[in-house]
Image (cartoon, rainbow, N blue to C red; front, side, top):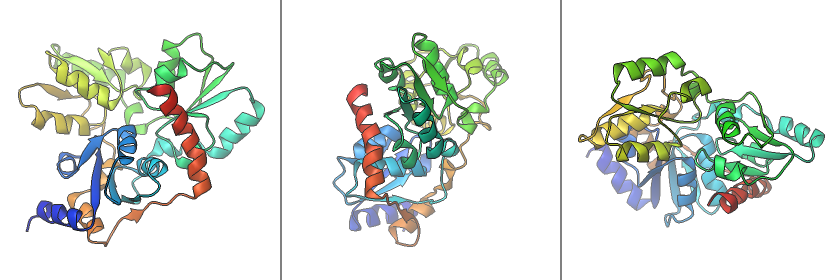
Length: 302
């Protein structure tokens, strides 16, 4: 029996629904019942009929699913799969800031821990950040943790007093202007679609800037070839799935999230067999406090 067949069989027997983030490798995407960015997966969790959700991604994503679907068992196949950016800002630092800036509104990128979400007023995604921040009427807006996404929003909304801290995605932030120019020179006929987690000096060369979902949508609609400027998992999946189109990697060896690659078909099978993985738990008061910021995002962003 192949590992794919074993997974499909156990998934049915043990009432599991498999979700995979778009940065996962193609062999994990192929096994999943639902793929998408972190917010899309969290929202989808509310409609899952199965009792068990196996989340192929990193810890903050599993926490987000648990926040919105607390009655489900949410399994993380690789318990050590984390997101460095999600843990760069401490809840204590935000609490101290709020005490000294009582009129400020604290906006948290969804790429944050549940403990940090619980200290913030509103969550945003890369696709909803601009829309939501434009609606905030406050003398000061603290945008955490991603200085690159926050900087891009600030550039679009110069009338807002947006304060940025020092957080960033170490994968996207490692991209340089030279990397982008090299890709454009190698593929002069191609458009460039980039994630706003990339540094500003890189984004200025993009033809399209948006979330993972927006990049995929742009790439599929484009009549020209597209250079994919985000974690390589997106291009890894797009290229074989759409042989009629032309997609190129941007800095293929650099834009790799090692935590996203910790999950393999063997790991997934081990969870289904009951030999691996973590059933993610959140203390109820923490879950409810974190949920307030996500509820605000749903209210303002949709």
